Structure formats: structure tokens, C-alpha cells
Length: 380
Image (cartoon, rainbow, N blue to C red; front, side, top):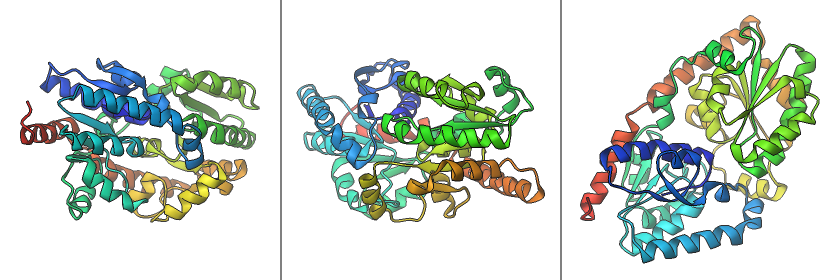
């Protein structure tokens, strides 16, 4: 298995737990993080080594990442596994899966690359690389079938583990926060480059929000690998005394908060499943942004907006992601006038419906699809 970042690590860990129940003799090895290792996964490399986003940022780490893939490919071809499962990270996993499949190793890709949003040309590589694709969104199998790719909708694993009605009071007590005080969660991303671009903006926005609402508190869940630099940046900021930095704990933070300022990515879907109003932000190297913008096929980048097919939450990207704008849009979710309350109620209804659509017995459905792949290839 290969999972390339924190969100993939969490998804893979949930899948591993179910696979071990069905195939207790299996041994899982490859690239993963702490969540996978807690399920007995043997990590030859940490998923942190692959956690890079943006074209310029990838170029800076290109030789290292390609070297890891080359070593992994050689190791797997020398000792072929019964099955390879790539979890997201399509730029790393799809070329690797294509080589392994060509050598007769069955391949399953978990989380379909978003060809419906950008880079549709990848469908050719997906068809060559994957025996089966496990999709987390309901419209994807039909889209892939148009291109001759076998896929199964398994739902989103997080929809099954996140409660329909999170207990904000319990989460705040767990974090030592005033149950009645307004709380904003700051999620600046899980990759080093994301945090470098977004954390200063988020902290500056938090300072402006604090000026407008002196009683406002903030929680900032940091991935363990970046906890130290994030904590240091918060300690040096204007809002040091108002921000609680957590070691991980993103779900506790999302349960505890009233609104979220969040980097575009999987965390936006998590915030939606927690039914929290949010402002989605992103900023990257200017050249990466120019390339990314030209490849976008839809007007939205945030998963809640993509799935709703409209801007149900604000997106502030690149030059628009100023501290002033981030603060203004986040504070708007906290207003208590009648229009603001109606806006939050409508969003709650949309997110309730999304949660119901994405909740499936993901592990059981994935197990069945994987068993079919193994049976077709003469495996266990």
C-alpha cells in the first residue's frame, strides 16, 4: 500500500482495519503514516516524504520522490505482493500501478482521481494502471465506466465515523474551552508548503477577528510532523494567547468550533461532515497557481462546493486570500442576525444530505471489490 499524505494515511488505516478482519494472515507494507502503522502496517518510507502539492513545490522534491518510487518499484517487482493498493496520491501511485500491473500484480486504486474537476487526460493512465478503482463519490463509477474502467462506489469512510450530530460541548470540555464562547478552527493544511503559505495569513486573519470579537478563541490542529514549527509561529504571533495548538486532533477541533478557516483539500469535506460553516482558502507559488488555474474544469476548488455544484461556502484563492478577506468571511458565519441564522440553517441542511449520501459500509464494499480482483487474478 502507498498513502501519500495525512488524509490518505487516515483513509488507508480504516481500510486496513477491515482488511485485517477478513484476511488476518495478510501483511501490509509500503509507504504510510502513523495511523496505518497503528494498524500493523510496516512503513518502508513515511507518507510525509510524499506530502507535496503544487508544481513548483513538487519540482523541488522531484528527485527524492522519483528515487523513492524507483526503489519501491524494484522491491515490489523483486518480491511481488498478492495485491497493490494505491491510496490517492495519483501522481505517485498511477505510474507505479501501471508498471506493477504490466508485471502481473493486481492493482486497486482507492479514491478516484478527480478527472471531473481537472486533468481529464489522466483517464488514459488510470485505464492502464488500475484493475479496479474504489470511488468515494457516487457519480464517479459511471464516469469511469465510460472510459472502460471498472469501479465501485464505496462511500466515504469518514462519513461512517463522523457522527451526524457532533457534540460541541463535549469537544470543548475536552480541549478546556469555554462551552459558551465562540470558537474558530484554523486548518492551514497538512503539507509543509501549504502551512508556509497559509499559516501566516490565517494568524493575521485571526488577529483581525480577535480585534472585532475580543472573546473569540481559536483551535489549530497540527499534523505531528509540523507541530513544532506551527506552535513556534503561533507563539510569535499577535494571537498567541487565544490559539490552542493541538497535536493532531482535527476531528476534536471541528467538533468544538463554530466556524472553520480551512485549506482546500480533504479537510473541507471533513468540516462539511461535521456540519460546520467554513471559509476555504488556498495560496501557492505563483507559477504553480498559473498552471493549476489553466487545468481547472469547474469554477470551484473546495469539495463541498464541487459536490453541491454551487458556492455554498466562500472560496478565497491566491491573491484573494488576504487576512482582511479571510477574517471578514469567517466572521460573517458567526453573525447572529436573522439572515445569518437562515444561511447557517440552509448550509446545515445541505451538509446533512451530503453526509447521508456519502455514508456507506465502505470497508465491506471495498473488501468485496478487492476479493473480486483477487478471484479474477487467481488470488486468495
